[in-house]
Structures are given as C-alpha cells and as structure tokens.
Length: 239
Image 1: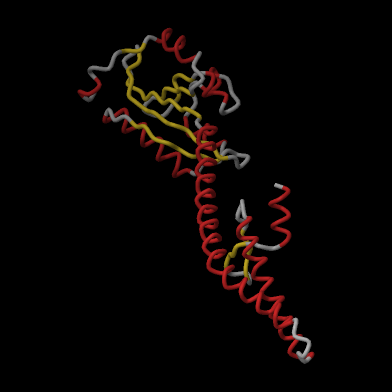
Image 2 (image 1 turned 90 degrees about the vertical axis):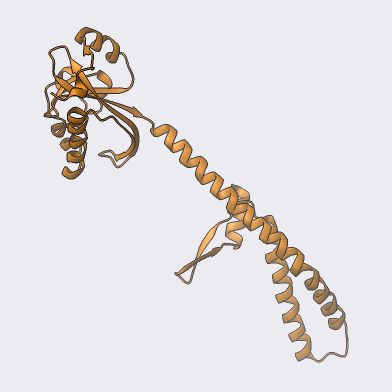
C-alpha cells in the first residue's frame, strides 16, 4: 500500500455512523471498486432508497438509474481511484440535471480514509448549493439588467439633450409657417407631414426618457432592437 496511506487514522464504524447519519450533507464511502460501504440517509434519499438499501451497491448502478452518460460516470470513478491510489483530495463545483430536467448544483469533496478493517476508501461529501447558486445567478442577472438600464438611460439623456433642442426650434418654425394663410394646400400638407414626423421623434425621445425596464424586440427576424411600442410601454406601466 502507498506510503501516503500510512498516516490515515482508522475510522470507527460506530463513530462514523453517529457523526454522518445526522448530517444533512450527503456522505458516502466507496471502496476501490466504487462499491458503497457506507451511506448516510441524506445520500440514500437522492436515489429514493434507504441507507441500508444503498450500501453494497456499485456507484455506477445508482447513477445509471438517473440516465447519466457512461463517460461522466467513469470520470467520477476515476476520481475515486486517484483519491485511493495517490492520496489526492478533490474539491469542486458540479452542475447536474435531474431526471425531470431541473438543474442542481453541488459542492463536492473527496478524500482518502482508512476503515477499521484496514481498507483504504474514498470519503465523498456533497453539499447541495442549488438555492445559493440560483440566488447568485439571479443577482448576476439583476446586475446585468441594471447596467443595461444605466446604459439606456445615459443614451436617452444624451439624445434628449442633443435632439430636443433643435427639434423644439423646428416645431416652432413649423407653427409659424402653418399660420401663413397664403400657403397653398400642397405646401400646407407637406409642412403638416413634417410637423407630424417631428412630433413623432419628440414622442420617441420621451419614451426613451421614461424607460425603467428595457425590452427588446426582433427587427426583421435578424437583430434585436429596443422595443418602444405602445404595448411595451403599457406592459412596463403594469409591471
């Protein structure tokens, strides 16, 4: 047996059961063949079994029920072998997809241990951190949306300043021109069209200034653009 196993203390089976059975963390001990020699209730519940029913089963038998890819299972078993043969310790974050399609996140920890009968096995502990990860992802998304909103608002303020000033002058001149009683009908209609277009621009600038939650819409099925439609504004007011 490798020298790095010499300093491993032998685990007392009774103490092992006393400590790990009460823990909410999933705990399993597997031998060189990845056969489970101990499992606490939290680990067994993952498979819908009791700790007694899980004990003695091969790890791959349990995971195959969940439909995990063979390559993925083999990579986990290779970790077990490295822990036992080389005394390595593994700690990492893992994302899995449960049978119903739900995502779950686990903090995994593996280290070598010696049992009372002299066997060196791998102690594996799994912390379900799904709730924490989902909160962190929600916060990350919220920060991204806040940054996006800040960019939109900054752009809106710039446009409002740069566009509204000359636009106000244009609308003022159009009002004066439209008050001319000597205008022909054709010219009056053209000036009215310009007036309507200018007021439409002013309305769009106003919508940009009022945005609190940017909404995107597909443009010609290819690119996304900022949605300034009446429906988007009404949805924002309702939200």
